[in-house]
Length: 194
Image 1: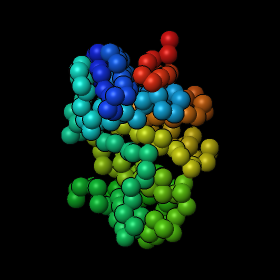
Image 2: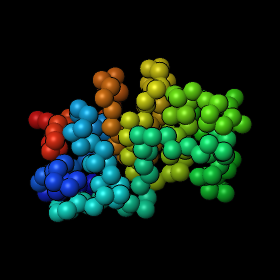
Image 3: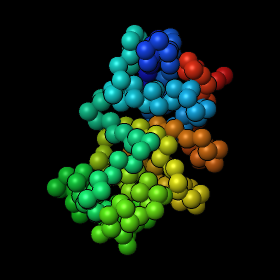
Image 4: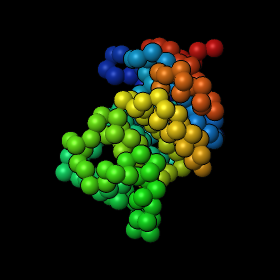
């Protein structure tokens, strides 16, 4: 069980989480939905172990087996689409390259550099790279930015088929409709909408 208990986090004098408690589902796709600036990204960073709470506890997560997709694509300008994927695939899984290219709907773009791709294509590559890395938990911050609705739906279906839980931030109602669980948030400080 992934659980936050009485967590406090702040940036300087600005509290983001104050006595925040939440239990996350252990399977399926969970969408964290809330207004910009309410603390969703800070929550993901805490879950990933990239930020430490000032007080409280976070349990049920192994940061070494947690995969994070940031809001920015963070692609290497000198690496091709295929190289971005093979860079994270273990040697015994290199044969999965074509599967990940199909997942990202980039099969014809394997030799392209990020500067030759559209914004939506770069986002799909970043998402595929994160998922290809593997893990026991996927934390995805706005994974569908710049991606058209039909592709978002296809990608959500693929996320639901993963064997590990997925926690993602999205403002889009159609994404929430396709999720297994939706947690409404508000803030700051971050709080669960009842």
